[in-house]
Image (cartoon, rainbow, N blue to C red; front, side, top):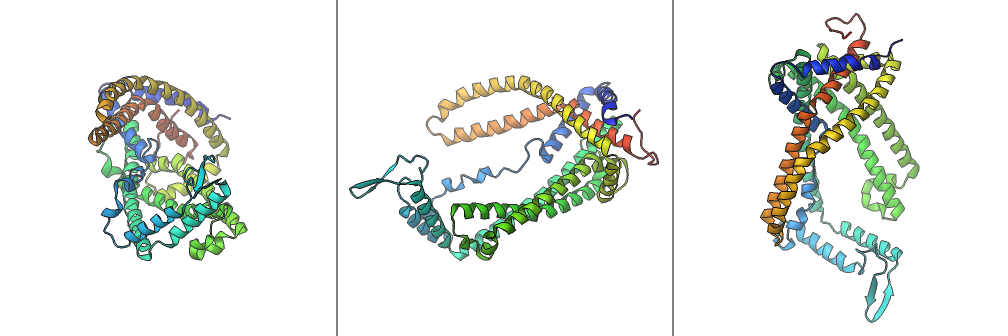
Length: 399
């Protein structure tokens, strides 16, 4: 018995070499590298997750006295009163050598006293938040979630179109950045809808895990669970929490397996056929269950190849980092003295240049390392062709 995952390595290497040869190589290489860069960014391979850290320091730039929104003054008063009631040294609770003065009498504040006082003040602060402010915050959160959801749909559509565009480019040897959008639009819509459905199925169980984690933390630290409102009873039921956590983990494992089958086989079968994403997923599940041995060897070989390719990529990235590091050091030597006086404009410019530098470096790295990515696209496609039943027509199989 032959193992396709092993036998296909050399033919796939030859395919990759053939693709990166011939006339117009530079243009083709840049185009495919750019497409791989976009696909990696949108699929998370390039760190494309939304970054909400820019909101973390929002409070630092706002002054309480400048707020005119109804209800915020009440929050300010509540927090001021809360802070006033927190013993000195509570914030610096890691260092228990802090001493707290009570008139002329000095005593050491123990960690248990700190925890009790801090919890009491947090609970008091939460209880004193005006209802209209809570309602406003909930509305803002809902609107933000809807906006991010819509943005996510658009980005997922783009990612899927780019994926099919890459496959078309490497199989036809005609790479186009936008030329295949119309051809693969319907496939991208079908795949996006299925991915959204899978995400919506997983979402409630993710929220359940978050609730379980918060409830267990509050229980173990002695917080008053009544602040959870109608969920307080469930939060105090440890067996129920464990059961919900176990159910959520099982669902995530199942969805992970479904995602693996879809990403490893389903999307490639979609490219080779006229099937919808759902039909492709169903057929891929049947295909995998009928070829468990071959798929197991594939997974092992992907791990091995991933390690080898990862080492090669790491060496290449370190070499490419040298000129960027030199430019960065020169830039730092110029900008640090200018920013020494607290010049905010210089700091903003420095951050902007850093972001641009990271973007340019990531793009260049994707272009330089494009052959490694193309190899895996070929490899996955060739493996699928090997295990497809011989009755499936219209597919060119690699020998």
